[in-house]
Image 1: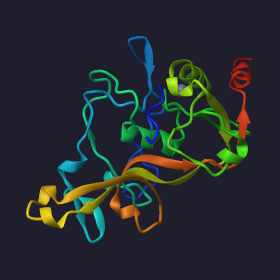
Image 2: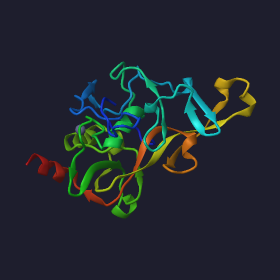
Image 3: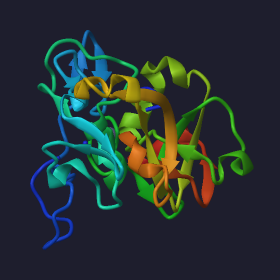
Image 4: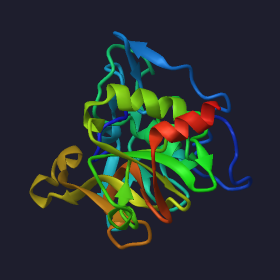
Length: 243
Ligand SMILES: [Zn+2]
């Protein structure tokens, strides 16, 4: 169900006049994809989709860039994002990781990670599910790569996702954009004679926007920070929703 831990685009102009990454969601969301009886999240990649970032990725003094970089490769905060190829719904769903474009869209616009419609929001904030048990003090200021949910999809996620066997439902009034989760790269001088091999994966990491490390990390997931958290009872929320 919800994509992996760790770990979205359409027409539209969020910032008219600027050349920015286009992550405007489709207004109507998506019909729920079902595979072998399981609902497949919007953010889940399919076997026919693959990360093709390495084809044109370079590292120079300014950090990572694509040799044929377009405005849509970089977000408004300067983060460079993975490139994916393939077709949504092609082959089997790959439960666990995220399709970075769709995670980005859902997280950027606070869309439900399952159906891509606007996430549920009340005066207490947006609805999220986290695995395990947690207190407000533990959640407040903690970070997440899991986009929020609408109430119907939160119930599906709880029923289907093994990671949510124990879970906490929360609302956050200010789930602030914090940074990127992705792959940090370093250059390999010994391999420099072969330009396509002169980049090496350093590690997977989270990096805050505005920091010196940001130019060296290729974004796979957008990270938000929970602010003004309230723990809620999902069944009571659902009952109120359907009342
Ligand atoms: Zn939904």
